Image 1 (cartoon, rainbow, N blue to C red):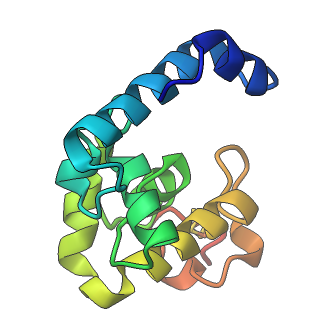
Image 2 (cartoon, helix red, strand yellow):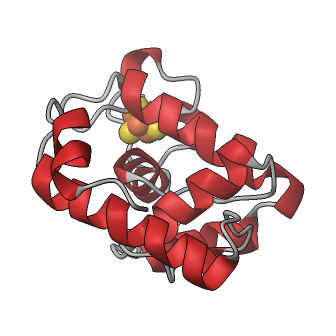
Image 3 (cartoon, rainbow, N blue to C red):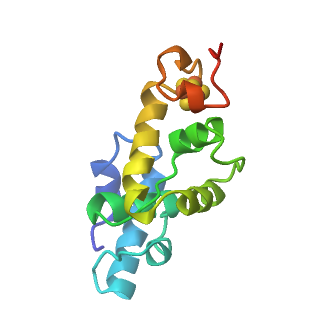
Length: 146
Ligand code: SF4
């Protein structure tokens, strides 16, 4: 929290938008110390009070760092869940809510990681590999149905 902004910028200069991100890191650390006693909170509601933290990041922290139930909706999960007909919503927060209602809480984290992985490797944004997708029979968007 006391590190000079320039030092943080230098440390993360290889990432995109590092100046803006350095500012967010600094203000996020300040809020963590001032409002949360220096501890990273464990709820989406608290985490999203931190500068630069949206629901996706909050769920990643909860699921990844703490191993707690977390429905992580990134662009892959959004796309695959739409193609599979699990939601017709476009807004990630609404999709998170809809998926959370359909999947048992204990499976949220694993489910979202599976969809993420599927979206990166098979159900890609351009040219989804429907011919090798094991979900083709169930998927309303499959392009190789007979
Ligand atoms: S069948 Fe095609 S569109 Fe449906 S999930 Fe698989 S890759 Fe995606």
